Image (cartoon, rainbow, N blue to C red):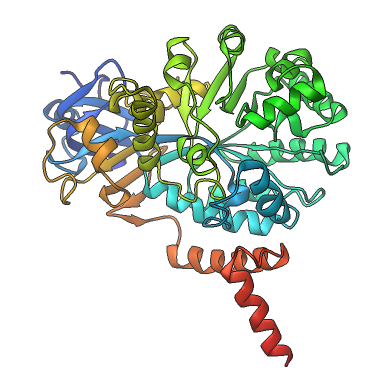
Length: 476
């Protein structure tokens, strides 16, 4: 097989690294290339060549070679739905339903977030995402601290760690009223901040369709339309949402979105568990894509998303971790495994969703959902060099019978040795290269303790209880 692109004589081999593997899973028409390689350019951040190792080596004879025939190489994974606003509160609320979880855990925290705590949480979770092969995150930062511009801290944190992303601010003003002007201003401020970062993009966020008053919802849709901004929101996550919307608006949340013009825009909807056939028909005929979050749906007992039906309808369905408050982990390998297994169990059909399906959802389908498949999501010459190398030197990948099943059902984050984001090697030999991981952990620990104490989460957080006890001792 040819390399896919002729060598560029103006490019020195020193700017190019060859990533070699026994299986290069391109997620492109080339499929699985046995004893393959990817030529990554650090100069322009692009993939220069993809093909069999001998061809790529011939094209770049002096380039450094990373990896060998025991390894597996994939495109970078795309986390299509996250809330880095929850980056400091994992490990709480397991026994709560969604509405209870939102009232007792999430809202007290979201009222106390600042740009600094946002940055600390974003850096911690960005480091975790890189370690599980994620190279792009589609984040919705939700907070109830108007005027703080806390969402801008996500851009600060992702820039420092070197993770690619699309960032949105997802405000709500129900049931607690907030100033509409300040909420709209933060969309503008976040857009301007993101414009300063070469590897970040912007979407306008809507926390939830049923969490905004008519005034805010209409103003938000108008703002997105006037700027030609794409949108990130939630849809049909729990059955209570549908009941509440019908009582309030005489239609479900999707119907409200249609009524107010939201579906005239390009929207990625998270969850879509409680959608019916008329809803699917609407989503199919509009510019809509979906981010499926199986782990968060299971933890909160929200239900099972009809992924096979949505994919059969031709709707791009991506995978997301969701926030640390509802998933607890940012491990995309867990997400892929659970996405396949829950559908197999729910349908009592081992073909309902396969390893190949979920790997596609985590890569090229994620890129399609974000309207970025021209740039990321597959290993093809000319695309952005987002590359993940799974090293075959550990117990999980000691042998490979089927590389797709081996990754989805066997591999763990510690099998990931190297990650490139736009040609920049952000993980090398299982070590982060852009930041001091110990410093990130130490800052996150301090920020988490302060945040949960301010939020009054003593009933569910050992850190908050310990902080309160320390304060009492110091005051004695």
